[in-house]
Amino acid sequence: MLAEKQQSVHTKSIHVDAPSHKEMLNYGMGFFGVILVWTLVGTFLTFYYTDVAGISAGVVGTLMLVARLFDGVTDIGMGTLVDRTKSKHGKARPWILWMGIPLGVTTVLLFAVPEIGETGKIIYAYVTYIALILVYTAISIPYKTLLGLMTQEPYKRSVLNIYTGVFTMLSTLAITILAQPVASAIGGKMGWTVVAAFSGFMIILTSILAFRSTKERVGASSVTVRKDIPLKKGLKALFTNRYWLIITLYCVVAYTLNALLAGAGLYYTTYILGNAAYFSLVGLLLFLPTIIGFFFMAKLVGKFGKRNIALTVSIIGIFGPIIKLIDPSNLTVFLTGTAIQGFGLVPIIMFLYAMINDTAEYGEWKFGIRTEGLVNSAASFGMKVGAGLGGALIGWLLAFGGYVGGVTEQSSTATTMILALNIYIPFVLALLQTVLMWMYKLDKQYPQILAELKERK
Image (cartoon, rainbow, N blue to C red; front, side, top):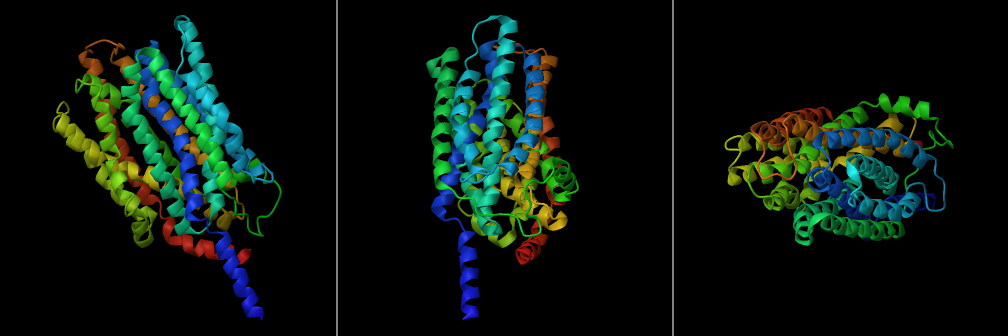
């Protein structure tokens, strides 16, 4: 009788920690809207500011870095706030409901710079961009934290991350391929405002869907049950968590690389390849390895683990910039290099959020403190720093090269800077990304960590 009762409890525990495929699908769909906004801003905002709104490249570069650094700092505060949120809906899900509409509205405002003079446009850009990233932080940190709260089982968490990857890919491709042609077809500033309005509507819709269709299941072990962990103690545990440090540095490097490939790509197709319309094709090929990987990645993860696959594709991605150097102005060569370079983006889309949440278990096992919100927000800080640094490099190097927005032909120095942003710097970043992934070896230890944590409950 006792054995049957224990078996029943065990079965119930497994069931509770196992979200259904329908729930994982709805969570992934929630990411569609979030990434739609992230991709629109990360890929086209710099170009919109310099070539449509008429703001100088140097000013835009400084704006990108200042805003993102400020955004990164607020990530820490948001993570702490999520950890301390108590409601009948949990601690992450309520924020997804609350912040959907504000993010939709600020997305539209961002791509609606009025004609109010150079100084006025700069002030408007700072105010609206900072407003957007604050609201984006308030929804993206809970989204990422929710992944770790839906399940603690490593394979399910990996599959859940792959679901998010599918919709991340769909939203990224939708914006990368369609945004520029649609904006150009409508024309002028209005074209980009319409694209932003569509993105804003989608974030509102998908946020409501994700809130209604998901459930938080994972709590702290008996060792770590306490109402509020002091921020100082939480940060100390965080910065002595070596795997969190590695994955956060990886976030900085990977998102700097991603910002360059996305944000500088339109300049390359326009002024090096001679046709802005090529950017849609470049965007498609950049994500081609990830698209193919979706069909069999779950089986590969089960056999080889997240880290080993991530390391392998990162090594392959290094050869992309090398191929581009064969003939930088040749479309076929550039597209081939782009497709190979796309292997380096696979870990960002398919594994990164799961790996970040795995470090929360490591921290709980090592230090007796569980802070999913702080872990995700601090790693998100690395993403924001990387995205800000990438955007800043684009603006600053273009300004250094004497870039002039909207002209037919650029100077040789400006052309050199465009080459550096698309080939030379990404090559160095791809090397660093691979080294950091090689240093991340938590996968081997994770089953033991999870087993010991379950024994404490």
